[in-house]
Amino acid sequence: MAKLKVEDLKKIRESLKGTVNLRDGTYRVKITVHMGTCGIAAGARPLMNTFLEKIEKSGSSDIILTSSGCAGLCSHEPMITVEVVDSAPVKYIDLDPEKAARIYDEHVVKGDPVPEYALSVGSETTY
Image (cartoon, rainbow, N blue to C red):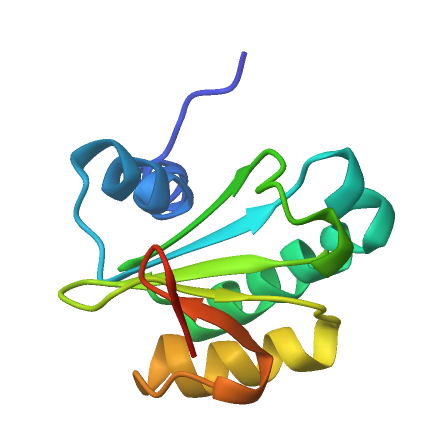
């Protein structure tokens, strides 16, 4: 087995940075892609890939991307929930990769929700 070099350890540390943030609970934004059977069938995987690419390209270490099961609104899939620290969560519905990219650029990066794709803010309020 080859010996690890300092450069190898730095690469490993960088690749695990998001995992450590998740474990520590330190993040600015949490994006949840609802990936129940209905979400996957409706196209949630391409949304997850869009967010993965955007986060990777940005180099952000304060954004957590996670998945959950069905949110109980199957007819509105694929959907995501964006939670910005100190703000109410926003549930976005009927998405595609282009809409997901816009939500990332406007809500996740700039903090400006995209009302035309949103179903609700918080737990019960409609947008």
